Image 1 (cartoon, rainbow, N blue to C red):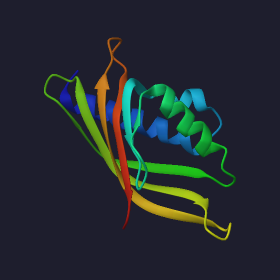
Image 2 (cartoon, helix red, strand yellow; image 1 turned 90 degrees about the vertical axis):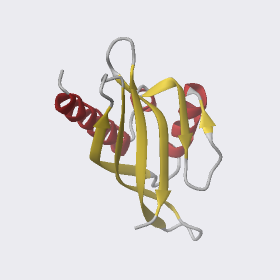
Image 3 (cartoon, one colour; image 1 turned 30 degrees about the horizontal axis):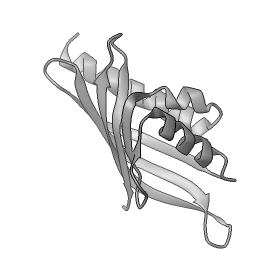
Image 4 (cartoon, helix red, strand yellow; image 1 turned 60 degrees about the vertical axis):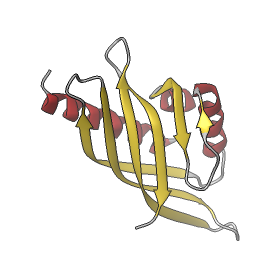
Length: 132
């Protein structure tokens, strides 16, 4: 597989993940995109380590009334050997504000991906922030 093909595949993988997350219906399907040793670095919150803790985080987030997360991958890069890559793009998270009214917080994200032994891309580092 060429580097360009690997970049396209990685962008597609991130897009598929975004659709599942935006639907918010299956915690298990959303969580399977992370590696077992993944780390999440949420904006303004403590670091979350490992798939079990990530699953709890996702389950808790999806249970928040009105919660929704969306992102749009814009850039992908893949290492020369095709084993590591990253994606970056824009995201938006809708949550209840202080008065209970839903607010949408726009931001940016970067994810680091690693191919597992079966050749599937898994997110190993997931970080986002808020801002224009």
